[in-house]
Length: 123
Image (cartoon, rainbow, N blue to C red; front, side, top):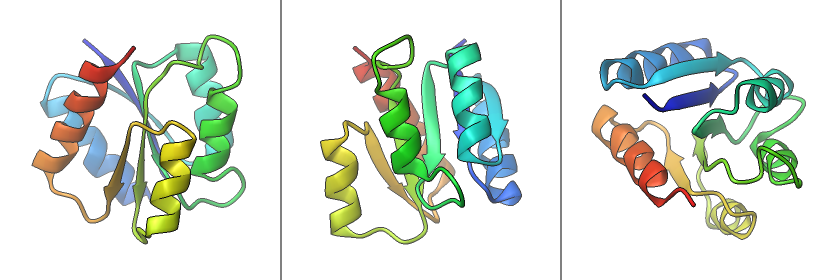
């Protein structure tokens, strides 16, 4: 069973994503901020990280940059979620090797499809 780490400062989003992914057979870890999420990623080594882009402290880009540093987390795929998608943010995320960019609000089907795609493409 793949493990997904969900990093989002919105408790409602975390709960919703946890519920959807758990119902589809994934183990889910959650974090309310980038620092906590990064610590979980380093200790639990999830198969995928789903991170909000806009958070206080470490934002999604910061989390991605730190995960991509040489070490055990450098190959973990990451999907960005954001309520304010824009082309520049998309391009920056792709340059930093994000696996996907998922605009909020997303459907359960869209979420599961993005997760399945990222896990299938995992190096």
